[in-house]
Amino acid sequence: MHAKSFARFCLLLLTLLSLSPPSAWANEGEGEAAKKPVVEDVTGGEFEGDPVYIHMRPLVLPMITKKGAEQLVTLIVDLQTKDYETAMGMHTTMPRLKDSIIRVLYKGISDGSLRNGGSLDLDQIKQEIKAAVNHTYTEDSVVTVLIQAVSQRKL
Image 1 (spheres, rainbow, N blue to C red):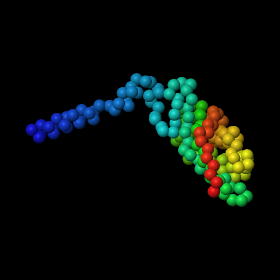
Image 2: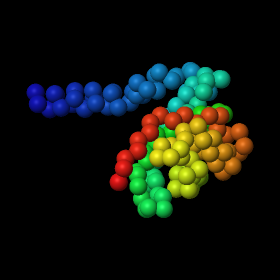
Image 3: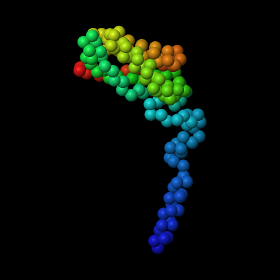
Image 4: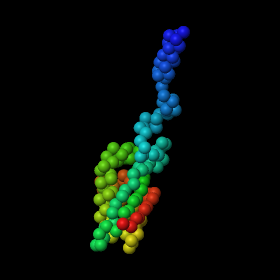
């Protein structure tokens, strides 16, 4: 009796393993959209004309003035790209993308060109990020920069 139960269990296990996963059932026959890899930090673009976004991890930078480090600035930024392929290209070169953003933010926050006194000039930050990324990649890679959160903490 014990051997029969084990044999049934093995047969059931083999049957279950031979089935395709439920995620494959959902994408079956959906054409081109089904072939796009799922990446956590890239969303949108499911249908033609849909906006595509890259969701950046929090960027943390010091605000350094003549008095030294005064604040710690945290920004969460999303980038709307022109298309899915552009977003995936940026995703695969994320260190390069972060470098272009951090360099322009670090300089501008420290020299004051991205500040209004002690607060950040968010409109100017958005313009500088867009210009920096479009310079690093291609001129029209980023459609818009969306600031999702800002935090400034005095040191």
